[in-house]
Length: 265
Image 1 (cartoon, rainbow, N blue to C red):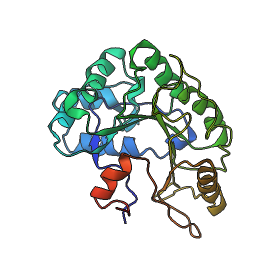
Image 2: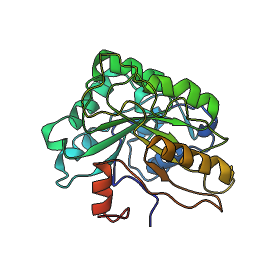
Image 3: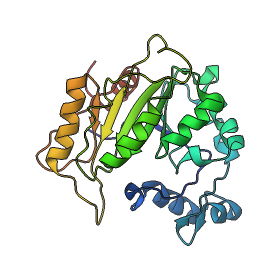
Image 4: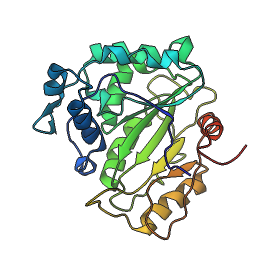
């Protein structure tokens, strides 16, 4: 069974800059480089995004991609803004993208937004994205303990549903201070129906030639911590000795089951 936990991809404002040991073998950079080579972007867009195969720190708007989710009829789990880090983009670009996902036509989809800079996501939330949209999952990517300690407190200050992507896992990570911990809201008490901490954890090791391996006990520890806290866990690439786990919160799980991407009825 596939380890992929999303059904569709939507990233109309690609762009990024490295900020973490997890960026050393950047998947998004590889994808954007291939797209530039295949002519997906115009020349101006390509040179704005990349300089000699590296991120420039700038973003572009792909207009023709903006309204894609509005035309998807069946509910989908959408990887939103994963061609880099959209939370680095200018507010004017975010103001073009984010309202699309809140349109009535998109209410049936589940949008997984992600950042390596949760402090910037929190800051953006303070200026207008703090509404706890029921179909948005605000996520942070961490690869080690230092990043977890720095990023997760910012993530927990964003009202709504929150998830954690620990990929690639580069060392043992203790999440006990964050799973099921106190809710720190920037706009009042916990809205009804929303989890008080991290609602979902995805974890996996690095893949591909030259990948940095994760020790089995590191990943098993994350799984055990999630289960102890009652938080669904989804494992991706795994070292030998670790049994795969495919758990997702509703309504993401319902969509993945319908697509045959996880077991259950």
